Image 1 (tube, rainbow, N blue to C red):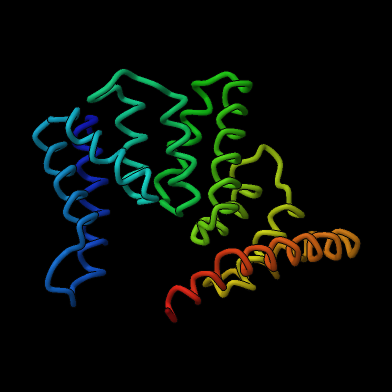
Image 2 (spheres, helix red, strand yellow):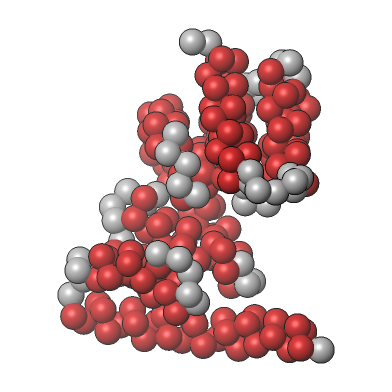
Length: 218
């Protein structure tokens, strides 16, 4: 199967999943319409236009778009090949639990020097940390998974901190993952990261949750 067939198959599957999820809805959201538009552009080999839409959606944390953008960047369709940017978006789609991203990440890591791969990891870590510090609650679990699925060696203590924060914020499945990771830690590490999580959580709630409640009540 050639590149076009592969990509169309992937975006087609993702689109089917997306549409099924909204089967009870009479209309698709703006992002869903854009995703379908980009898919149609790929089918018509208008890659330059498709990549612009996928990039817009990728920056808005649409994980299927992040994956498709990574595919286009790796293949050099609609833009020049750039493995570093492809890996960045592939990592993000992996953290967004797009299963196909696992193989893509592995392929890209094989194509790049380890020093460059590490630079991409650090760039992604900085992005996630800054985003969460600025109130991106939806990326808390991504930051936890970063320390398990993106780093060269799993950093259970750091992951535990973010999953603990996620659980405190009521994020789905955070408590389950937190407890699984806790089994990998020493008692000393557990206490230290629980304290680190508490400090961040209190600051986060004070800065973003309470301010949001005030706005909603006004």
